[in-house]
Amino acid sequence: MSLMPKQIYSFVGGIFLLIMFSVSIAAQDEALKTSVCSITAEPELHLGKNIEVDAVLYSGFEMGWLKDLNVCQSTSKFRFDYRYGENYERETSSKDLKQIKKLLSRKILKPTDINKYRGTFSLRLLRYEKKNDFDTRFDYVIEILKVHSVAEVKSCNREKC
Image (cartoon, rainbow, N blue to C red; front, side):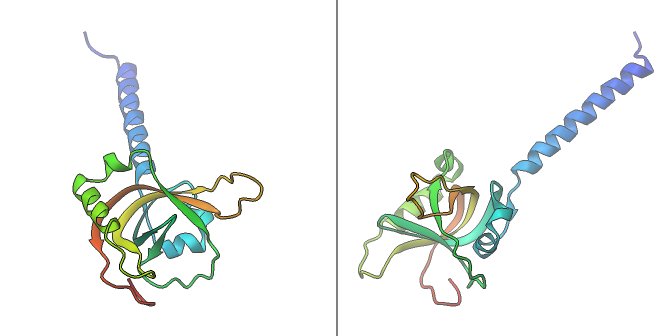
């Protein structure tokens, strides 16, 4: 039994559509490489997107934040909370998770000291959902999806981390 030209075109067209659909899904998952400075300067451009940044994560008692590796020129009053995504522990390698735990659990020697580490973060910027009308703490939430290339931060100055 031989295929008719109409059936061949239909078959090839179906394969083409399947390939295009797969490429479209892969492109949606691809992270936008940017900086914390860029996010704080124009948060609406990054809202809901998968983002990758090189930054320092600071973690203290009831607070934490991401800081760009360079000084930001933006005068934005960008306020954000951060949380770990649902698949964070599954996506981040066990080696990096152990290193993060070690760096964030080190003993604080001075009241001005704070635990921190440098890394490449895959994240998503979301709108902060206020708990009530008086909740004005944050504008956005940074959801950390994955951390890679974790390193200790020896020192930070005003110009660079």
